[in-house]
Image 1 (cartoon, one colour):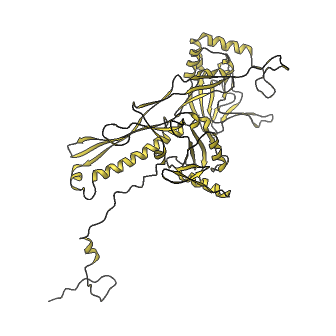
Image 2 (tube, helix red, strand yellow):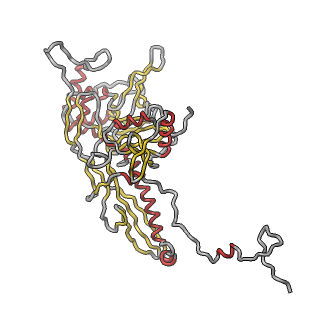
Image 3 (cartoon, helix red, strand yellow):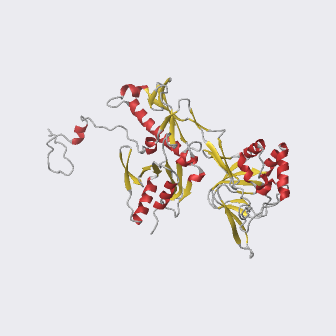
Length: 471
């Protein structure tokens, strides 16, 4: 008869096992488990710090005073998300339309402008080609390039926000472009085709007559620098005519409708019935689904082209870094553009880049109390991490600076609470039924938007380089 010898553990040749092995013991043990973990959860500081306004009717209207300067030589625009439109009365800044005040014709002209975008280096108009568009520069810089006396390329000047090129296109004989217009930075402009102008002029005879009269009068007097001449006289015999500012209510105020992020959560009834100990499967599935929806919500609040903060920042509130990386000088300039800045929001890499620039100058970052905890700050304004401010392939991102709250004419979040089957504020979970495969379905929805009450409530530092540079 052969004796049974207990299996010897590895590395213990010649020794007899005296107790139950670990592998066998684990079969009888209870495993301590965590709830399902999710790597995609971020701090979501924007959602936590943004003041939320109750929108009971699903639409939030922002009434503003519409202010623009008549006769300053600059065209004023109105932004609605990524869309830009020109104020009709501001078309009077074009030389051939100066003094024309018929609102219907100006409104019709303004409605025919088409928004276009150009990247740095792209040609907008080429010298020698027929001049067939009027271009209004809403944002960015455009250089006018000509040919020097020896055939070399010569910069004739720059046209920036509020400027225009191609005003002669409205005349009887627009001719050809006398220079090449090239985007020096990313440019957003409005273009009016000559064909569209001719259609409007055909319907409004006073417009055609005014342009013909202005064209016959020739150009306005200019000084030796090319600026419009100002008639002056010595002593007290006369006064120069000053530009006048016209302030009115915006007749078409911006309305924000609540956006929605939705998904259908499906759980098999067998899973919901049998596998709920020690954790409720439906509850855990719902928790992770809501986390994903909240991440999408914050991303939309930053990047959506209709209501996202990056696209709703006024062009006059956008500045670029001086040298590439974010420096104390850049953030100081961003601060001075508004009163009562309450928060900065930046990608973690941008915060690290700003810290390196401070270290180079021997400057220590401060701290501020925010969201119940200490946060790094600049000039007493907390800097919050926001990974939804994406880093481009070129290694650049943006930094937001905001004044917050409805009472302070700042930036607010929009939502509606008290909705049917509400699970969290502004988020509901609705039972959709069980199908023939015994799969339970739930519709999970969250409703939200954001609004900038006045233009200077939100500022953007653009072209922020986050890559580490050699000293």
